Length: 176
Ligand code: CA2
Image 1 (tube, rainbow, N blue to C red):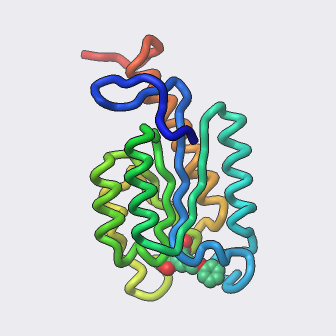
Image 2 (cartoon, rainbow, N blue to C red):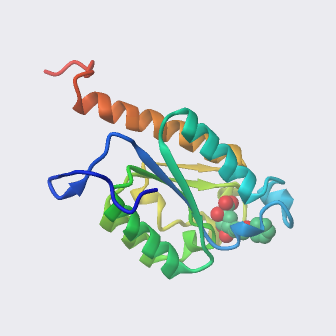
């Protein structure tokens, strides 16, 4: 992903090439090893490679970032705001249930996002049922394993395509 996109409109960097950031929270670097019952057998590299291939085929820029540190994730979200990233897919992992700071960062940059969880957080311990992120998310996917990321990306691609159509000349919706 470039440090900044060419051109600015209304103070926001703009580019014709859409970009999506995939954020992975703490311990997701361990995927593919322990706890396959909850999190499946795919490694994080497997998941990211699949998403990157699909992004490339769709002609968008896609970058993935994982950190075990809350501040690093906050910094990456702020950076995404400066870069003009168009959409975020985020699995905040354990921070789902604790991090007001990461939620605040997403609210501040106002980039639409889908919250993804590998496991069905509603079928596990009660503390996993509350998320600081769901209320601000465009949508939430949980319990579909690695496929959840793929479905979230398909949604994001269609969401961005629709947005371009609505704001460009391809508008097909009826206006009253
Ligand atoms: O289901 C999800 O995707 C979670 O976000 C995963 C988090 C958990 O705290 C959330 O409640 C639900 C935990 C990620 C830990 O990932 C591991 C992967 C392999 C081995 C151990 C942990």
